[in-house]
Length: 335
Image (tube, rainbow, N blue to C red; front, side, top):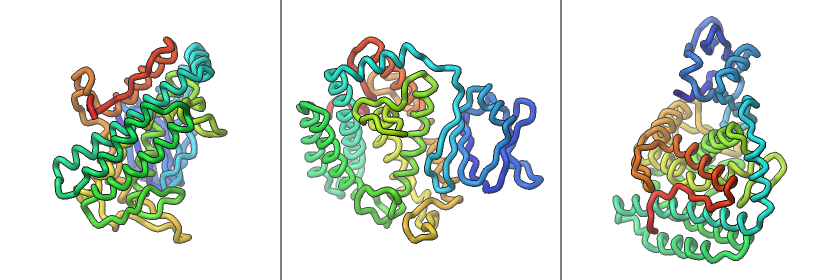
């Protein structure tokens, strides 16, 4: 199964039989059977026919629409897999303050723990970068998260850990890419542009997955419900940010896959974004990172990060239905 990224401006997505075609003028850019497609992601000025959308929905293919620069506009999903019993369980758990605090702690602890995993692995290979103090600071936040008495305290701990983590992340960038901390809307530099784009793509995958499994994506636990925000997807992405998105960004920069020439500035002068050619390089590495198999740290089976998305969504569903502890993906047992 493959994700299809359509970035060719003024192209058209059509269907013929059980195949999807991408055409521009009289040229066929892509021709693929539907059963080989997992998701279709459309960027910018790309048209699509009603017949193509019908075929996509009939094959349970996820479809997402982005701006040319990578901001998620919306998703088109089939309503066939809605699960009202799971949603009822989700609402019951949300009304339980003890459950909300416990699952929020698990989410924050997993994020911080996986941040530490990434930093420690980098520090082992690059001892000259002097990351010991950063590791100690983040470990303090990890211990503090266990002692949080309410969601407000936990939110402050998560914010402090994130700031310390991005300070360390800046030291892990080996090529001359400017980065002075996490900033967005719009991203002011290439590193922030890459982080935002990676988070957006992973968020889209997780949000579509949760919706397809029958969750209520807009009802989160650590992230409060907010109009128009899929807060549950915001919760589940946290444990994957460092081990999927951030690792991907470091690979792209430190392995010279992307250069500063792969980025463009917005016409207003505000915001930096990947060029079309840069996006192509990004997508290739994105797919490699998400589909590369590794030993699951808990059960030792071979698995990819993309399959972990579903595994963790299933674990969350089980947690909600049985009112039990949610176990996130932790890349190391002891931190």
